[in-house]
Image 1: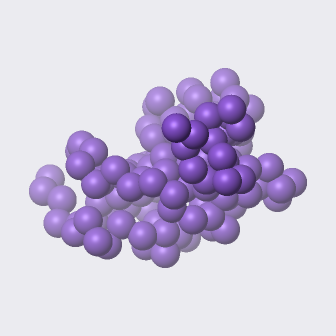
Image 2: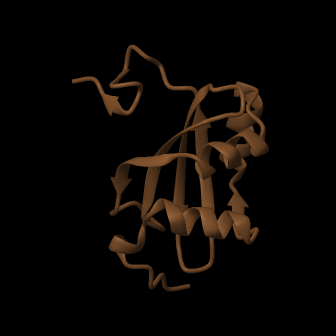
Length: 111
């Protein structure tokens, strides 16, 4: 299927809308990582809902993707990587960021 989503359309509001409309594909990799890291799908959705895109990966294949930083209900920071196409959101992974690798309240990679 050809992806007609423009790179400039990769924004958190579109991602939130697709999740709200249940247009979410949880990849096997993502589900495995969530289980290993004891993160629920609901936590991921809530973190996306209040999150912001902190990195863009416009050239990712098969869809442009991004890294979202958001908070769970218990104020824990979560990073979510997801790809987006015209149909929906493809959850790739989610993790608790390591403060040794991130700065600025885990929103910028350390150099």
